Image (cartoon, rainbow, N blue to C red; front, side):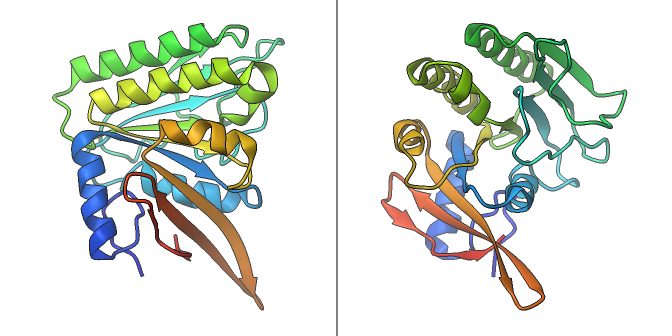
Length: 229
């Protein structure tokens, strides 16, 4: 059972109230779980918001294999932008088949500061172009894992601190894919930056596939238990 708040949180009173607060005040969510790109993709689709609601969406793709591969769509109401790293061969990390009318900015992989500045600039421009309502800005960061492979963890922490802070300032909702187990050292290192940590997984019951999520709300020290995405 779930309540459709455009954030994928289960429909208990506590979680519904918490989600409303996160949308009003701006929030950042760490999406974890090693086992299923399908579950990451489903959760991502919920967190970027329904296609019928006006949302301003920013997708950030880092080099390496993407976690969810959730591509932007021209069916969504509102502006959509892409910010992608490129690899040493000059190939963009964005998914194949991106519509031509979606603006894409490409940055090199060498410096995290370059990526961070480009993200902040994109949020600044989207905020200037739109009278953003709380929760209207949605940011998908796919994913943190390549950055942890290529850079010192403290530098990745600084980058994510800058991006999550700016997202909250714009009253936006950002989610960041990190396909590692909930008890990973990297998850423990980064989770203080986030308002919630959401585990996702794919399970099977006979021939039936089930995609599930479990929310950990840091300020309330509460979790949802496993529920369907």
